[in-house]
Image (cartoon, rainbow, N blue to C red):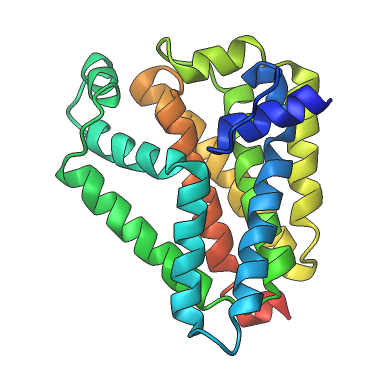
Length: 242
């Protein structure tokens, strides 16, 4: 199990791993656990900043910390998908743009707005940051595994590489972890987290299959960001977290 955990850390972060790891599909078992660890680290940073920094500034710094640790992996996916998936484009054209490392106007705009929404939602969080952020980041990584499990990979990139080694047992294990972390905050918030994540994954599968015939690594990353952002918004609702 240790090689699979180390593989998940290596895949989802820039933390250097100097030993042999499992392949990405096997390592997907621990994607939610790595996400929860990132959430707990961010929550601890927020809690430690109380009395020293404005909450809004601390929230922005936590987002910067996550982007630094993950290498902006999922944020880059949001920009790529926003640039590529336009109403009049063919699947071939979309794939070509997804492979282009440059960010266009639509991608930059989508990324800016998403970061602003995430920042404001995180700054307005009404729940205990520890279970809230652990649940949000764990569930969003579980959503990546769930989407890849129920949707065919498109193209020959990271999604295909992940899918080829992703077993049903691994997918179910990862999803179970995400659900378990989602129950940590308790109450109505947990139900809303699971409901929004499930709806997002199902809608993403339908949309990407219609436009691309499946999902790519960028599709997975963009879905992760959307699930996480919706989770942050859930925790801004006072009645939902009381």
